[in-house]
Image 1 (cartoon, rainbow, N blue to C red):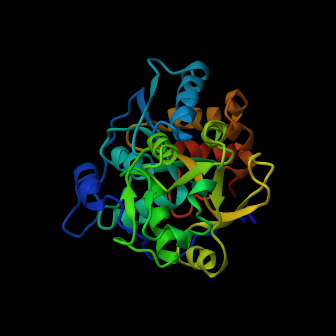
Image 2: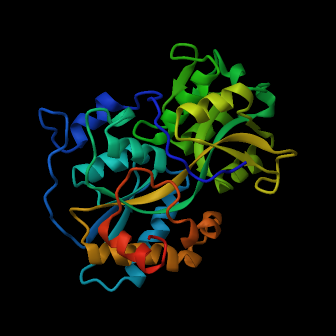
Length: 337
């Protein structure tokens, strides 16, 4: 069911920490709502924004930070992977020069580039697309013992929807809203993935909605400890509604991905990609980072490493402009006309 990326005109589905995060973190906006032109301030001391402990971004970012330092010949290069709230926060922090690199969901980056959705009135102009890594699936996680068979069953339940500053919250709201569950119809937990699964296991949460690369080792670990992990499908008219109104795509998680599945589970997916500051990362360094993303992907020890392929590097770019160094690398690889 996985399809190639298509960029759709879509309406916002939930305002993820817009009031709390964006005005404080994005570059100053002019009277017309546009962003001030970022000033160049190139550096070789880089901070790479990841996500919460327990997700894929955090350990993946740590591995890539080491790969960059080991394989890029740049005077004074230092790369530190830091824990963040993930997609929205990473892009916002790039905008105000607090991060130079960040992993983010492609749909969130498209909104940031266009000043839409969670970035309404706060367009990010300096986050350049450096390449897609792997597809990320929405995984509605519960335990068999909770008796939840459909997303509609989450009404009145306690549901972990991801930390503020991450794209998971947006996806969770879209999924719940498509099933007629709005704010006030459930108790949200704004937790990192690790904490959310702990609360799921100890009975303080009924479900956790997470955007993760599949397979996610953390789910296998939850299965090892809890023993009755269940993925709730997103299907039917509700699935089609989400696909039509957002930049999510149909996706299928098969039993080959998780050994606790007996049959495929339908859901939605976006892509995880790397974005780099166009005013803090020079063209030459951006070129080397992009080259290392793909030519050293075989050094990634996580399962997602097997999905990182230069042939798929441009999936999900949408309206986000390239980082100049990345564009040069992709041109050399014959991916651009």
